Image (cartoon, rainbow over all chains, first blue to last red; front, side, top):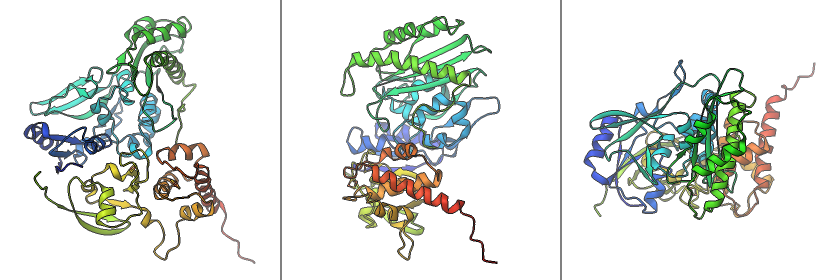
Length: 301
Length: 172
Ligand code: FES
Ligand code: FES
């Protein structure tokens, strides 16, 4: 690997100061599962590597009594999966954090890192979007909060300024009749990168018979996550039985803008966008009705 | 390129305090193998895909090829060299891998052993499907995985049986 200086900082201000000084030669190291692979392959260069994992604020994970969650930027996917509150309260996010890499990748990888790496195929991003998650950023001028939707602007690129960093991801309180799911298609069951993915969140009325609101976000079928606003508009306030799954799949397919690459063809991805959206929607509905809690994907524990 | 400062890394390795000089860009895997000469931890892909380099970091399963050595400053690492007892008695998983012939060339074995230990530490009674999902990050070109899965399930069964068996009743 290329030579660099290593800075195990213990505060956000120290990290931001190093970023500001380091010009383009400073890289933030969080879980390292993307960064170290990129440095080894020469896809990125760094003169300074700023390790964030010793900043106490970034290690915070909280489930506030009023609902929602606070996930510090350095909280690993494995830490999240092991919290009963995470698995039960945010099954759609748990689907995603439980799918990234294998167990040993999850032991290091973080949701904030998955977001900042800005891969079009990032598993956690569609799930964060449908949960309405917000990103807390810190820079030399202070802090700001932005929605996850819109955070990634192109493959590998985010709205972060050069001297800005993510401090935490905040998930707002969820309604009582809420259900969510994230599903992806991969040739292998585990340890693979999504050919396409879909996250769905639903809020149903008290009887579980009507949609109050629905959000759908697609992964790996465009340069960044795609939110399918036409499904949101079509389903709001409608009886669940009224709108056919075929129609919903068609809306998802119409929103997808996939490319053909080594993982799949554009046509296959477009088809998958429809199939995965409907499957994730059905799972989200059954979770909202509390008729299905278990993960449909392989569970370790 | 300007030479970078070497730093002393102090950490606990297999229960023993260790100090070693290393460069910032050296991975934990490189320091274990090249500086400390503990070659039980293997290098396969070096990019997080094969699991040959797996170790436990404060009990958490990680790829040592994707960690800088300096990241483990002050922390505890367990490698395959730390599995057997000091008197040489093999860890039950090591014994089961031998009994089930769960290895051929053996390069994947240390990684599988650490992965399996992490699983049983967390879930002492996994189902076969849980074992297979947990081990998905470990690649083996030789065995076809089945014997490895059976070895792990066998250890899980015998350990839970040992816990379930009531203590022997002394003859009246
Ligand atoms: S050598 Fe680390 S995962 Fe392959
Ligand atoms: S025994 Fe040869 S790779 Fe597993």
